[in-house]
Length: 404
Ligand code: TRP
Ligand code: SF4
Image 1 (tube, rainbow, N blue to C red):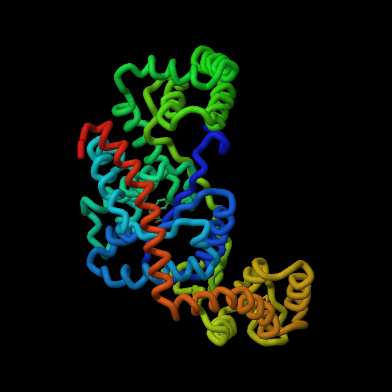
Image 2: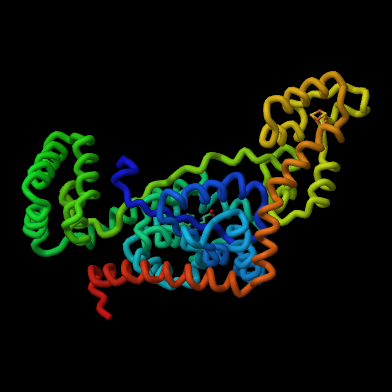
């Protein structure tokens, strides 16, 4: 596996618009995005076509959620100055690449993606025996490859989709990366690096191809990454030449595994819309208090005078997220000795949540009051994304002999 250094420093991720975002999304995904945007060139998009694969009979909710989702991203700190924020269906190149990739993707690759059967099973009430749903992961591959993204932040459940993307990219490069005179072109590209680097490249390539020296491969990739004097095409050739293949047109992305969200819901299970145990990012302070005050505690603690056990209590799990050691100590001692009541115990969590969501709610309100500002951000992000996607498609059409 190649190191971060050698990967394209571009990050891409998407989210399906199927409802309001909640604290689980914030702690699990959005905080991560916000951090990534300082380090990488980031592309974040609303996967409305993906939502349509499962909600084709209820498209209104997709349209409504799309705008809300962008507002929630902005409110959480995703910045249009650092990231491209856009809507999948506004960049038709995703669909074109999906179609072209479908020509070389064996049916069996899609049928064996675990989410295919799992989701059909989980959403039994829907008919998901559709062409579109089978193609879901391939559309995702197109999303990633159209930007030649190197890093794809996703949860565990999406790793298989990134893996498929790697296989599809490899197959694509294998079929379309061969160009007439490839070796000669690679040789002349090597010379352009200058004597010293050319010698180093040749030496590293030899160590890799003859002795399978992985580290030499890494170093050679880093060397290419740092070349200032060669064209993009030559660089891709030399990446391909390193591993003996043809030109690398579509680089293989890596999954950047998002640590599983530890955000517990109001019932102690993972916070999730389907469990109806969520606090939305737009929740008012009153509603937060109300929801927290009525949430269950240790069921064995019936009366105020009964001692409780934090390990049997969902409120304790929220303290794990929001409280420092001192506060947690206070909870454990007070609970097990019946020194504090559950209402007292919940208050610091309520305060912390209200404080956490205050700036988010305020920013969301600003955007809700100014729909044209949101539109402008989406328009700009979609145009910028399209520029990149267009370039990739130009290149792809060329190697697939589709002229314009
Ligand atoms: N399938 C992803 C999910 O359900 C959403 C998604 C669509 C995505 N396209 C993507 C994520 C591309 C990362 C990269 O969460
Ligand atoms: Fe749960 Fe706190 Fe009540 Fe103990 S005191 S049962 S930890 S809410």
